Each structure stands twice: as structure tokens, then as C-alpha cells.
Length: 434
Picture 1 (cartoon, one colour):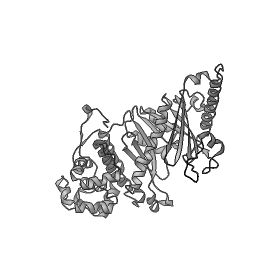
Picture 2 (cartoon, one colour):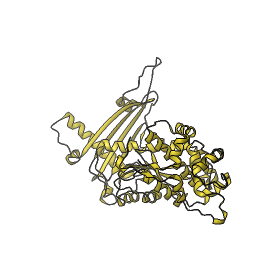
Picture 3 (cartoon, rainbow, N blue to C red):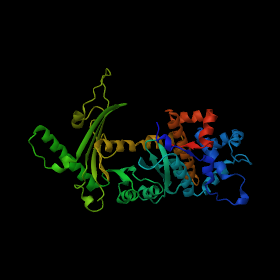
Picture 4 (cartoon, helix red, strand yellow):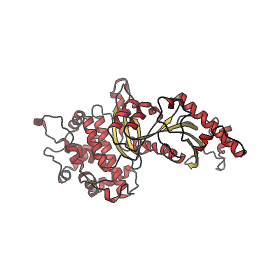
């Protein structure tokens, strides 16, 4: 798929050149290893599937001569594991992040796209932290490509709410739609997005109790009114203005071992939300999402006897005797509200909600399952090491996009480990932008 027109594509500087822009904190007299070279061959090691520092450096030593032929300055060979850990612990994390943002920002645009923001714990590192609390990392994902645009460690005494405005301030989000989970449906976050010329589609759950109840109550009333209007064409609704601005769409599908029913309803009018008169005056549309998940039920002969949605809501099923209804992903019937500063259709709203969660399977799952991040015990070096993984993941995603290869990330790693020409093209040569 072409993400940009041919006329706008250009070659981005090499990874090695990008790493040269990272400030080296060491004294000039104590430099046995060039920092840019170390950072570059770490990415090369991770991108070929060597996803621990020890295995990565082992691969680099076995391929030292080949690395030299690709322009890396290695007068003293490959650095030891302790030296590399010390390098990663002393590099200024923010300056390294800026180098990353500059590199990926030249490859894919951040304006006018859908950006998903979400946090992730690095669980193995909890053993080395005070109070055994897993450190958190905030990420921004460009949904269409699956490319990571930025990361930001969340300080122990803070949370995502205070970190998101800072992270977004590093990016050009003009005309982009930002989505985040309900925890981040906060006035400060939404105001930051608007100040930068972006838009938001945010979830409302019971952590915003008054607004949540107002949404559930109003859409319940609208549903009852529409049913009366269908049964009695002469009936005059109590909400004529809302009905003019109302839209809905319903989807149903069988997904592995369950049936899913999703209702998306929206009113392009937020006047029934009390907060809009003060804090949320910028809200232009309010949505309601109801997602019902019914586990497949079979009889002794293997026949599908799963109840209909209507029967399930009233009576449950053999596998779900009492359907749980709430605002959490684990609930059998999940009900959440949506607010946005944009007017949109129910289809658009539903797409934003569903695509937001690609951050789980396209980023968090890959980092833990393929890059083994959840098993990394690194402490002082963990944030910069996490950024090395993001460089590697983005390179693998770029190859998937530009070669139209739909293989899983772990298979792309095997491909790069075997194909040195492809490895050279994406790690040591200039990369073509999207």
C-alpha cells in the first residue's frame, strides 16, 4: 500500500547518521567505542531477532567484519555487555528520544492521521524498583502503519494523565485524531490536543460518573423514542433537535469462539452533558457504544446452540449464566461513552474506537511476546534500551509495508537474519519515506 504519493517520497538519512546526532556524554579521552556505532549495531542485532543484550552483542561479534564493511567505525571491536549497559544508562533519554522522533518523523507523517496513545508496564523491571512497582512507558502509535512515533517513561509518582500532554507536545499532530483510554479523558489532555491543532475521540467510563450516567441515560431515552416512532409514525418525539443530529450503525460477527455485536450511536450535539457548559465547551459530538460478546455454546453433538443476542441479554447462556454488564473490556456487555471535538458519523466513531486498540496487538503484544520486553530486568538502561527496540520494530514494520510482506514480526526477524542485502538496505542505507 502506498501511504504517500510517489511525488512526496524521499530518502531519509541512514540510521548511523541519525545515531551520530545523539550527544555522547563521555569524556573525549575515554572513548574506545564510538557511540553512534554501538547504537547502530544494537538495532541491527535486535532487528535480526537477538532480543536480549547478551544475544544481541554475541551476534554483533560474530558479524563484526560484515558490520565494518557497512561503514561502522569499530577500531576496538564490539563493546562488552557492561560497557553497553553503561552507555545506555548515561545517554540523555530526552535527546535520544528527539533523535528517534526526527528519524521516524521523516519517514511517516504525523499530521492528519489517527494516533493512538497508551501506556505499557515493563514488568520484569519491577524487581529493581522501589516498592516493586513496574515502570510504565507511554507510547504513540500511528494506527494505519503500526509505526511507533514516540515513547515517554512515566515517573513513579506521576501517571499517564500528566505525561500525555508532554509527550504530545513533541509531535506535530495538526488535524490528527488522538485516541486514548478512559483514564486520559481529562480536560488538560483534551485542551493540549486542541492547542496543537489536533482532534480527539475519547472514551467516557465510570471514572467520569456524572458524564457517563448522562450519556447512558440520554441514549437510553433516544432508543426508546426511536422504537415508539417506528411503531407509531404519527408519534412526535420529545427530542426533535437531537434526532436530526443522530446516527447509528450496528455490526455483528463471529470471532473465533464467540459472537460479537457492536452498536455505535452518536449525537452531533453535546448540550445534554453538563460539563459542556464549563470545562468541556469544545465537545461537539457524544457517542454511545454497546458491545456484547457471547461465547459459542454447542450441544453434545457439536451443534451450535448459542442464544440470540436478545435472549442472551435476558437469560444468559450455559457458558455465561449471568451476563456481566459494565464499562470494562472484560464485561460480557460493555457500555462506554465517547466524546469528541469533531462532528462525525457513527461509522467514523466506531472505527476510531476499534482501531485504537491496535496498540495492544500491534505494539504491546509484539514488544512482550517477540522482543521479550516484559522479561527485561534492565534498570538504569531500560528506557534507552526500550527505544532501541522501537527503532528495530519500526524497521521491521517498514519492510512489511514497502515489500508487502504480511508475515509476523518474528518471521521478518528471521528473514533479515538470513538476507544480508535486505538488512543492509534498511539498517545501513538511507530509507525511503512512506
